[in-house]
Image (tube, rainbow, N blue to C red; front, side):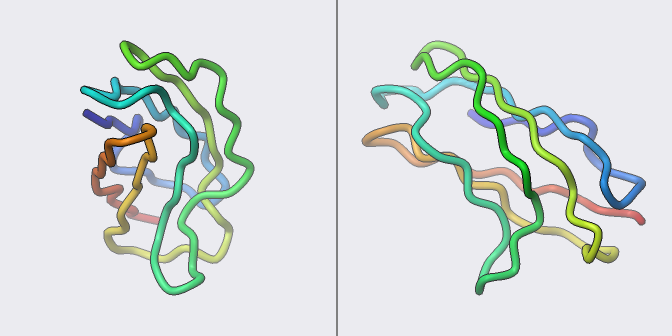
Length: 88
């Protein structure tokens, strides 16, 4: 399970918090956002990696426009995804 807060975002450069749990995975290994070399988030910092609870923060890129982008989490054997809505 993955959750991004706030969602929707309302400003370029806005800080977001990514939380969730890894289900059957071993723990949070990476966060990937966007597709085709166009990430939605930057400055990702993972602060808790546990399989029962993970926490990370990131910043919405200045180049992001209005729309929807995926946020993927690699949980070591499990993959989670949520959609981040941007109204900038």
